[in-house]
Each structure stands twice: as structure tokens, then as C-alpha cells.
Length: 313
Length: 277
Image (cartoon, rainbow over all chains, first blue to last red; front, side, top):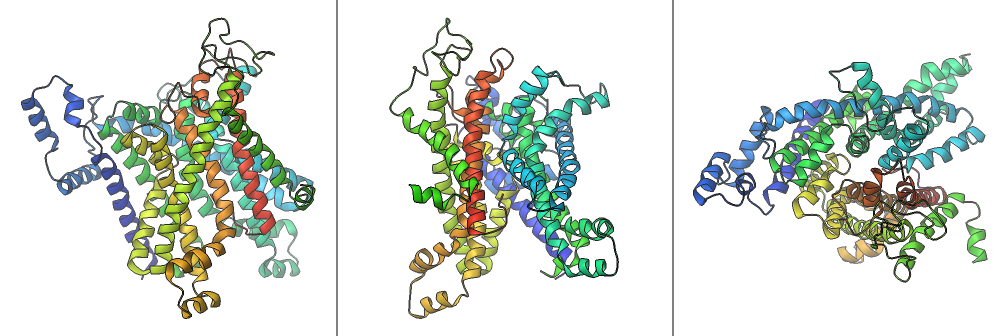
């Protein structure tokens, strides 16, 4: 079967399963959303009317299809506490979280690629060993502990940034990016370590391939072979690594946002969980998971374009 | 003892890792017998005092001894990470062996399910779990167990598929070994080289997830101390009393770093390349 078609079907199946998991999780919980909205003093009649409005007394499949078709058209229902459409709330907060994640991803690439190339230069020598040990140490630093320590060292002691200060996108764009820099760095550091490690291994594997030796024996200099052949080819397997990293960065940003007091999706999610605002929680979870699935899909497509052999597997 | 040290002499990762994890496990052990101070005793006189002889790690905003709380706080972290990984492993073994042995449609469905669970970024699904079943130790363990299970199911499944066609497995089936025995006696041991490092890393990731959940106020609930919720409480006082943040972080990082190092050591020693998540 055509690879793209097969992959698209897979994408749709995964999205459906993700939506079912998200929906079921909140379907089975005890507690009545109508009671949450109206409070303990509401009469039975009021409760019945509201249940009718929210479609709560329909059967499970009907409710699921309503919810999914709503989600597809961008209507995720109304938040119980904020009395605002969920999609509106998401639209306000999601860009902040996504900018943070994107910046973290960019920092990861910008730092880990040179380090990976540097480490693969003379494998087993001092620099390589040092990077490997440092990598293993930083790899195991939880992003939020790193964020706290950064606040302590860089923010409070060295005064590189003001702890807890956040400049919104509408106020000033450079200010917004600057206030996201350190949070993004905290998210990125463990990922830099892992990406550097994979890139080093990938370059070393590529270096010993026959086409590189053939190119060199025809008189290609080491630098040219590195830049023209080895690095581009060793980046191909890194695509997969980066897909996983991207998903983890999104998860890591959630916690780091709380440390740096950034008004992203995280605070909204925690509030929603604390006050048991399930339409809102459901909407956030579905969007975040759905985005991850789509990123995986796009990465697979990119991978197959760069390396068509994948399509045969 | 000397032989053990000599045997591990060439794997510094294993030694350093075991040392770090040993410190944390030791803290858990002594938490059952002795705490320097009552971890719940508050006091205005000791409010936010800096580390000194009587309180080596200082005191927090309610005047509680940070050392005692750190010692007690290692307990939920270690308990949750170990029991959570056990659940993840058991689920992973069951799902992975069904998918690997039966194959076909069931295999596809199970893998679709595990793909979908893995699509939820980081601790998001664990947060959902806590939101649904309620906070508390048991729901964290269960939630994290389910979140981590798919990655082990994948390792088990692909391992079993590789081993399925080995001669010793075919011969075992030929002489009539039943499937359960075949799995437990013949297939599972063959998976150990891949499974063991992944399990050790899994314990570390689970400890991190627990700490993150507690930090967000969704995990271990105050007043019961855990390394994560101590960080949450200490964060507001990070300027005036950094020790309330530094010492819990130190123990968390030692545990996680130690486990990663052990896993790296196992991997180098038994040469089963590839870094798992």
C-alpha cells in the first residue's frame, strides 16, 4: 500500500483512539457537572433542565460524537468555571506554551548540533569523555529543578533576569522572547544532552561507511566530507529523536511554566483540574495530545521524504 | 565485597550511580527508625533559620526541620517509583506477550492503544488520572504505571518477535512446552538485556514524574512531605531561604542521576546499545 495513505490511516486511527481515551476518562468520573455549575442548592427541576441543555442525559455514543464533531469545528463546549468557550481560553494560552516549546526546541538544536559534531571529532579522547559525562549529568536533571536552580543562581544571584517577570506578546515582542529565554533553556538542557549523544553516535556510524571512504579516496578533504556528506546524512535518524524530544518538551514546558510563572496552558490546566472543570480539562488534554500525534505524523512524512527507504519497511 | 569492587572497577558509572542511589535508599531506611526532629513540628522561633548545627539543612517557612522532612520525603518518591514501575512492568509483560505471541489483529489493536497512550506528552496523562480518580498515593502509582506500561509492552513485543523463531524456542514448543511456561521460563530471560536498563531508567523517570506531580500540587498531598511538594512550598521562599529548595532538589537529583548512571553502566557492561527514552 502507498506509504502516505497507510500513514494517514494510522494517523486517523490514533487520533480517534486518543479522543476516545480522553472522553472515556472524564465519562467515568463520579460527580455531576450540572451539580458543579449550579451548586448544592439547585432544585431538581433546574438540574434536569441544565442536564438537557448540556446533553448529559444522552447515551454515551451520542455524547461522544457530539463532543468529537464539536472539537473538529473548534467548539469544545463551555468552561464550567470561567463561563467562556473552551476554545477561546485555549486560543489565549496555547500560543504562549507553544512559543516556549518552539524556543526550547530551537535552543536544543542550536547547542546540541555543534556539541555533537565536536564530540564525534576525536572519539574517546578527553573532550568526548567530558561531554559524555556532562551529558549524562544534565540529562538526568528534571527541568523544573533546573528551573528552580536557575532562578536561584542566574536570576537572584547573578541578576541576569528578574524572577517571575513576564512580558506579554502584545506589550513587546523582544521582551516576550527575552522573558521566555531562561524558561526555554531550562526545558532544553536535558534535551541538549540526549540529542548531542545521539548525533555523536550517528556521525560516528556514518563516518565509517564505504561511500565516505570512497569519497575521501577520490581526494575529498575531511572537512568537505564532513560538511557535504556525513553531517547531512547523520541528521536523518535524528529526526525520530527530535520527534520524541518535541513531545517531551511540550510536557516539560507544562511544569516549567509554573516555576517561571508564565501564563500559559499549564496554569489553566491545573486550575481546571483543581476545580473539577471537566470540559476545560478535556479540551486542553485533547488539544495537547492531538498536536503531539500530528507532530509525529509530520515527522514521519518528513523522514520518508528525506529517506525514501523508510516507505518500504 | 572486595571481589565486587574489583569486578566493577572499570565501570565508574555503576559505582557512582549505586553510591547516589544508596544514599537515598539509606535515607528511606532510616526514616523508619530515626528522624532528628519531628518533621511536622512547627515553630516561630525556628522559622526560616539558615542551616546550623541543630538543623543542618535549615528550617522551612513553618519552622519545620528540613533535614527530617527530606529524609521522610524520600519515602513517597522511592515507594511510588518502585511500585509504579512494578505495575508498568507487569502490564507491559502481559500486553507485550499477547501482542508478540498472538499477532494479527489483536497485535495491531494493542499497538494502536499503546501508541495513543504514548501520544500524551509527559505527565499529562498522569494529571488526567489524578483528576479522574482523585489525588493520593494509590492513584499516582496506578496512573504512572499505566502511562509507563506501553514503552515496556513495545520492548517485550519486539523482543518476543525476535526470539520467536530461534531454534531453542521452536524446539521447546516441539516437545510440548505450554505457552505460559514458554513465556516465563524461555522468553522473558532473553528480554532482560533490553528490559533491565529500560526499567532502571523507568524508575528514574517515574520519580521525576511523581516529583513534578507533587510540585504541581496534584501528587503527594501536604502535610505529608515529598521531595516534590517540598519544592512547591519552598519556591515562594527561594530568595530568603534557598535551603528549602536546594536540599530536596539535591536528594531528587541524586536518586534520578544515580539511576541513570546505573542504567548507563549496565548498558556499557552488557553492550545492549541504543538509549531508551
